[in-house]
Length: 378
Image 1 (spheres, rainbow, N blue to C red):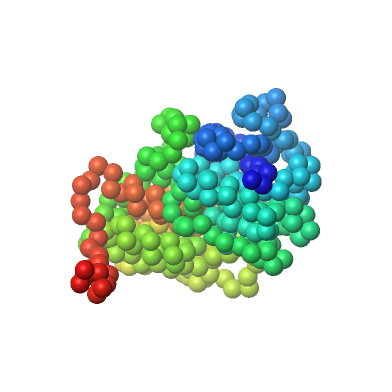
Image 2: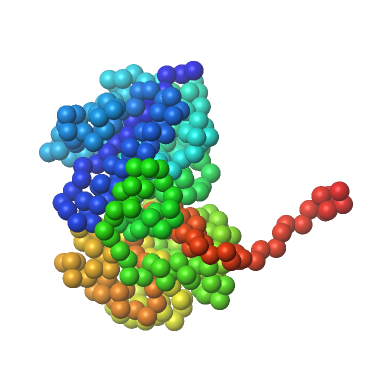
């Protein structure tokens, strides 16, 4: 078998409050991921972090430190690792991803990375959180991006074949915001480290329980707004009881610039946030919103402290005027609204579809079965 290593990029924990909680959750999730990789007998496992090795929260694996003062560049750090370790096959993970993978899915990643031909197998080709890379040293010959999201595009531009894993909660969920933590807690998924962390989590959401109730209500309509994949929407429609409406826009905002402003962003700018939520309440009974493409100004987002306070519907902690007004309107609207980022309307939707049925033995949405004449005759 080709020599395969796993490298996990772990960002530093920031500030305090919700931002710190997200960092702590990533650490717990990373420990679960390391345990799963160990079960697959994968060695070496290396964590790349700003933390010094002696203060690393992962004492049982090798930790490589990078200077906090130097602007982080994903591609340069990945190339540096490949140059030093000379690995032929590589599993790459961001530390908030991959921790829900099954043993079979990890085995599939390792098998792919063991191939002699150069290639990439991504959890999400359009916005990478983790990937298996075969003949990984080929990456030393091509330009790699500053962040991991467009890694698939870099390989494809270099004519390196790329594939994508089956989309489900295990492959698509990534811890990125406090809303992701609350959704994960409601689903009751995860390994021992993240479950222990979530059991003591001191965050609450004023609308999440009402939104979950709507997902199992056949008479309700729930809106999904933001960077929603059509394939994810199609999957979720089969697993919840309510009707859905989706406006998918802003996809690719982290993988490349665009001259086109999202339609809802224009509506908010022209009509104001109160009018936006008034209209939303006439269209759906509840909504799940990826706010990043709606509220970005010239493609720029405010610091994570502001975004995360908005996700938790805490307008008093939001200093940015636009985000504060949006958060106040979301909190006060008559319908339950859940705010977050890309993970909420991607892997988060799969987990919400699981969480809404916890403790409820109810029929799911009615779906006609496909008709196969040959099978019916047999």
